[in-house]
Amino acid sequence: MTEAAAPVGELTALGTPLRPFRFGAAGEGNKQEGGARKFVQTAQEAEEMGYDTFFVPDHLGDQIGPIAALGALTQATSKIRLGTSVLANGLRHPVVVAKELATLDVLSKGRLEVGVGAGWIKEEFDNAGIAFERPGIRLEKLDESLTILDTLLRGQECNFEGKHYQVRGIKG
Image (cartoon, rainbow, N blue to C red; front, side, top):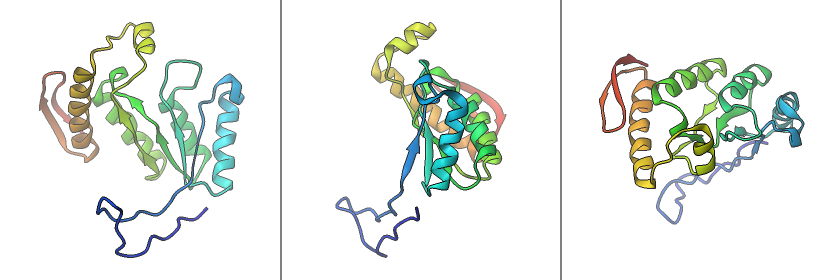
C-alpha cells in the first residue's frame, strides 16, 4: 500500500502536522501462528501485499525473540519497515540495546523503527528473576535509557552518570 498524501500545511487538532496514514502488520512467531519459519513468511507476505511496517512485540512468553527475529527479517525482506512494539526497557541494558539496534538498522538498510517502553507485565519480570520496580522507578530507568540510546544511535560517545545507569566512554 502506498502512503496516502497528507494535505500540505494541514494540522491536527493538537496543532501538529498531519502525517501520511500507514498500514502495519505484526507477528509473534509463536506456535499458534505457525512458529518462526511461518513468522518470516508472514512478514514476506505483508511486504508483497504492500504493508508499510512489520512489528514484533517483546515478551518472554511463547514467542520468538524480537532482536533475533528482526535480524532474520532484514535479510528476508527488502522494502517493508521493521520494528519493535515495544522493547521492555527493564529486560536489557541500553548500551547492549543500542549495539543491537544499530546492527539491525545497518542490516535493514535504514528500515528499522524502534519502540521502547518501561515494561508492564510483572509476571514476566518475576519469572525471569528481574526486579519489577514501581512505575516511577521504571519510568526513571526508561528516561535514562532513552538518553543513552539517543546518544549512541547518533554515533556519539556516551558518558552518562545517572541514578540507574552509568556509561563511560562508549562510542555509538
